[in-house]
Image 1 (tube, rainbow, N blue to C red):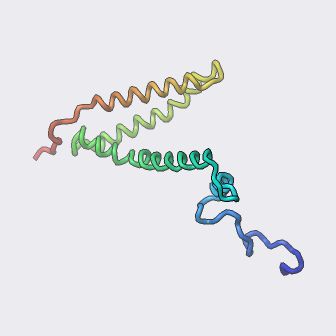
Image 2: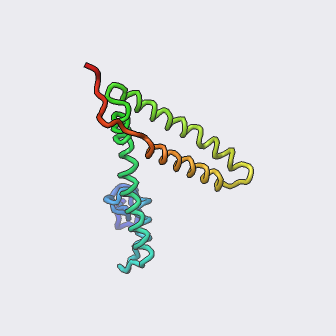
Image 3: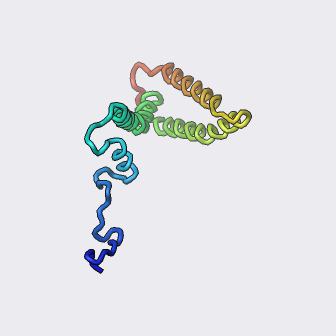
Length: 148
């Protein structure tokens, strides 16, 4: 059937997605289209929200994806080249244990009152303790070298 007879086109056969493909995902595109009204005037609150979202995405990307490099470099500085791989393995193992145990503990803490407020407070204290612990690490004056 042709378009002249009033038949609807099959999806993907000449139909045009209302969300431009350069946006990446139709969900993101629809969100942006809701935030940016068709009359061309962007309300201040939506502009602030969009700027905050994009800023968070950039900061999140730089901090989250630098984790592997930072852990590897720090492990090499603290343990030396000979034990760097073991230090990275220990760090990643301890992180994995925390990721396995954390949700269980949070659920047990949240169950009595049905709120995660105390669980988030405990997690915040644990994060702060980890940050303080990282600040207290003393690096050797000179990088350890392998024995000759």
